[in-house]
Length: 296
Image 1: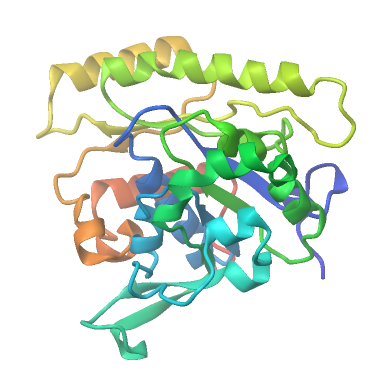
Image 2: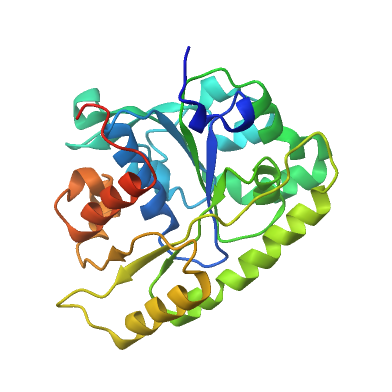
């Protein structure tokens, strides 16, 4: 197996890790994680979306609700050590019909999802009760032997024990990616994330067992102004984000009133609304990050 070395920093065996994290509910983390993952997959780059939020948003968009997951292992089983990565990761798909038969879904090539469940709300407690569980992601990475290019980590709006258990495996070549709406109060919350990343780095400084260097290499601002969407707050947010985080700010994701349909239709945005402003922008972002279409 030969994988482009840019997806294996420092010659390690596990892929790039992109952590979509910000302590802000409804911040568009899931929309960005799934849109970027699907865009890359459709261009020929295999990846895995880890849904680590008990609200199961990424799981739903990529084809799995609670009914579809009945009897299947989830991220919580992986964290608890009751299932392996290959047992939990499922082929990503999207809904094209009613019910749960195979013909109700269409596959998304090159993409898998580690689905969540409501029990992930107890992830921090599970780690607190069994300190060895803090190494669940360490073990997964060390034992990985696949050809994925990116692990897309979709987190809850929390800086608890479970996010920490993942962040400690990030190096400077990986990226923590806050995806936030174009609102000044959301932009101001990024400062707390920067402080949290420094806490993780400080706690792991000098340790040989984990990289322990999570870095805010990229930032996403969504819902930015368009010719018909001219909210003053969105303009102020864009100005503030550019002033404070211009060096890591990715191309803007423009506002679309239809973008919320991805949850209702259980289908990722690049497939559901491929010509919408956000879908066009996510494609630009992935090109900017070096994920050109391998079939072109």
